[in-house]
Image (cartoon, rainbow, N blue to C red; front, side, top):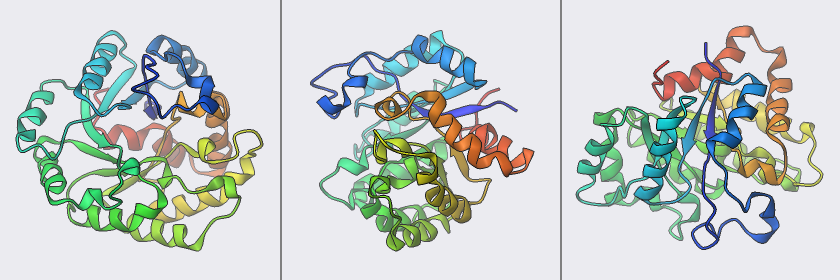
Length: 279
């Protein structure tokens, strides 16, 4: 079974387009391309990755497709389309001609309207994904988990995945009952999976320790089980706080006591199934 990194990014750094990369994140204020990631995957024994959008434009889709054409280890792409566009069905049909386009994402966490995902026009776009066989990545902060519960409930046959365990406030060094309860509620919908990714960037970048993540990992595994969790590095964003190997080591150590089958599912089997990867 292949080992898959279900969440990473490529970009040619543009200080205007990529203004979210602030000066304190100077470690990632540069280009990150497949040739930078490939040796890290090989060293880690990881066979492939899912490239996820960083810019809300179809230009970013074209950029990712170009990279995927040249690097076979890019097994899938999560792109962006304007799901509120009345003509979005035509764009979805267009991307179906590219087998590596597996699904789409919108940066919901940055929307002023915290319930943006429940907008009728947005939901109409989401309703079209199933017929094309597309997945949908949900990128939110904890305050949006309640909306996400209603969102995934509205489309019970649509495969969703929650990115970065909904970005809890790990830096605060405590887990809130509200986050735990909200995770359990949204995880009750079996069409939702969860990427265990992005944790180090929500922790204290300079002083995190592996044990700081255990309570969050415990909560996610308890809520989703071992068949709906996916490993993701969030490289290169993770580099503001940790190396690729450090991110991998956190979860390797945590799952070391799990069965061989459970580890295989988390480190690749679940991603392969969720994104319908061509092996």
